[in-house]
Image (cartoon, helix red, strand yellow):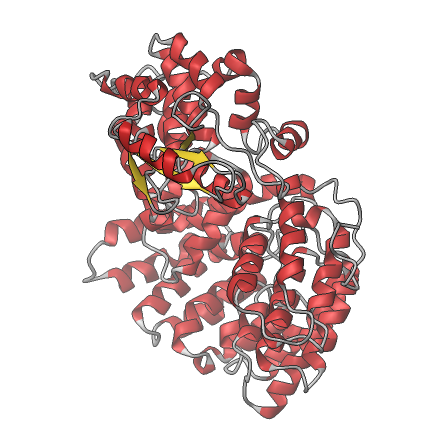
Length: 598
C-alpha cells in the first residue's frame, strides 16, 4: 500500500508497472480529494484531472488502480468526484467495472452527470492513448451492452432520448439487442447509427431512410451498403432519383461499388451540369477498383473497437483503418468533421509518420493530434522550413529540434531549440546532438555534464539528479517511449547513436552559427544582465546579503519563479515542486562560489 493511504478503503498493489512519478502523483491526489462528501474542486480537481490525462497511457497497466475508481463512484461522495471516478474507470474495462457502472446507470437516484459519464464509459471501446494492455473482455462487453440496451429500450418505449451521451456510446456497440431496438424507431436513433448493423436492421433502414433526420442519412446509407452488400443496390438506386444531391451521389457510388459498372450511366446522368465532375468520376473509378468496400464504415468498425481487438493485432488493423478513413478524401472532404479525429487516432495506433503526412495533407487541422509522427515525417524528408514552422505552431520546438538534429540539420536544430520554453530531455538531447554534428563536441560534453534536464518528482524530499528514479524506470521498462532519456543517460555515445544521415534531397541547413553562440553563452553562466529568483525560505542563509550580491554581480532579482528566469538560489528549504518548475523553465541553480553568501 502507498504511504498516506491508510484512511482510504483502497488496497493497491506494488504499482511496479507504473512510472515512479505517477506513483507519487497518485499518492498526492489521494491526499487531496475529499472523502467526506464535499464537492471536488480547486487544486484537488485540477490535479486529479491532470493525473487522469497524463496517466492515461500508464495507469491501466495495474488493475489494482481500478479500486480508486470504485471508491470514487460510491454514493457518499460528491457528484464531481463520482463523475471523475467514471472517467477513471474508462482505463479499466473489466467485467467488475461494467457491473458497477451498469448499476449506476440503472439507479434512478444516480445524479444525471454521474449517469451520463457512466453511460459513456460503458460504451467507450476505443483505445486511443490508453495502456496497450487495456482490453475489453467478452464478459465486460456483454454486461455493458445489456446495460446500454436497457436504457435504449426504455427511451424507445417513451419515444424520447433523454441522454446526450447514450447515442454516441451506442455507436461502439455491436449487438443484436441494440440493432433490434434501433429497428423499432430508426428515426429516433439516427444519431446512434454509424458502424454496426445486422441485416434485418439494415433492411429496415433502407425502406425507412426518409424517417432518418437529414444530418444522419449519409452515415446511415453507408452502413446499409456495408451491411447488405449487393442486396442493397436495387433499393438504393430506386430511391436515388428523388433524394437530395449529396444523398443521391452517395447512393450511386454505393451502387457502383456493390453492383459494378452497370450503374456508371446513372452516375453520369446525375453529374450532368455539376462542377468538379472529374473528381467525382475519379471516385467512381476508385469504387470499381475496390469492389464491395465501404471504406469509411470499415475504418470506423476498427476505430470504435480498438480496445476490443487483441493487442498483437491492433497496429495492423489501425494501418488499414487509417487508409480506409482517408481513402475518399482524395476526392472530397469528409462531411462529418469527427471522422478526421478518428482517422488521426488510427494513425497514432499505427505509429506511422507517412500516414500522418497523408492525414495532415487532407486536413491540416489534425496536425496537433498526430504531432510527433508528423514532425518526424518532415525531418525524415528534410523539410527543414516546414518542420520549424509546424513545431512552433504545435508548441513542439523541443521535439522538432531533436528530429532536425537526428536527421542531419544541426544548425537548424539549435535555432529551433532556442525558441523552446521548457528544458525537456528532448530539448537537451537536441542541443547535445546538434553541437556534436556541428563540430563542437566540447559543447556536447559540457551540456551532458552541466545542463541536463530536471528529473520528474518522485518524492517531497528533493529533486534527484538526472537520471532520477523515474527516468531509470523509463530506461529499463519503456525505452522507446522517450528515447531522449535513454540517450542522455548513455552519455556522448548514447546521444550520437541517435544520429541518422540527412536525406539526399533535404533542404540545406541554416547558414548561421549564431545558435551555437547562444549555447556558449548559456554554458558560460554569466550573471551580468541575468535574472535571479531567491527560492524558498531563508532562515540561516542571509537573504538580504544574497540579494545585495545579486545586484553587485549585475543581475536583477525577480519576485517569482517566472518563465525566462535565468538562475535561482536555493534557500534553506524550498518546495520540490518550485525547484522542478524553475528547472523545467530552464533556470539554473547558482552554485557555491558563484555568488557571495552562498
